[in-house]
Length: 233
Image 1 (spheres, rainbow, N blue to C red):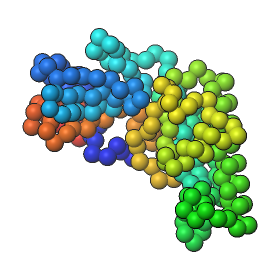
Image 2 (tube, helix red, strand yellow):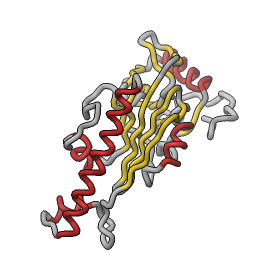
Image 3 (cartoon, helix red, strand yellow):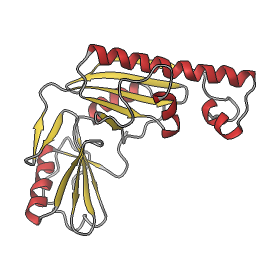
Image 4 (tube, rainbow, N blue to C red):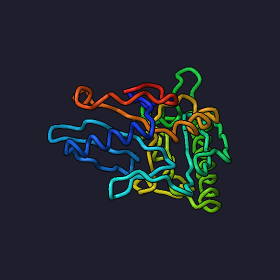
């Protein structure tokens, strides 16, 4: 599981990038909805640096480790979802939900099928009811986490076509689609499984760097590669 076209970099390499941006007069902006630093020059963006969720960016232009960070991740695919509560980057609690949402022959979720066909038979009605229960149970669990823990972030991996089911159902999540605490997960995942939550336990404690084609010849690459990083840059 990896953000497409990114590479894992160390804290030392992230600091080098920020220092170089300062020296060259490039603009550095923090985007809270992505928990990301965006580095730009007068022409275009040069780099996007996804920060570890246990670290923040201060207005004075410094990284800071958060001493007590709590967050919840929600991974949703048609038919399965996994929710996890994390403290200081460690997965401490999780719940997996499954539902009969996919039409066997077409391999399409009932919600998408009804949007394209506009009709329903007995089996389709059952799947639609299962869909509503599926999202209701997800949101009930999210409400439990909101009451039990002082959550700083909500991470969401869910196709936009299913957002109305998540946000407009009988039971709503403890955040809105416009909440400042909501971060859309940039990581591709296939199943919405517990195993993918476990992998995100590692991924969300790393820096991930995306360079634009314009930036590659501009950014210095003399820093020795970190043994924990997947690639050097």
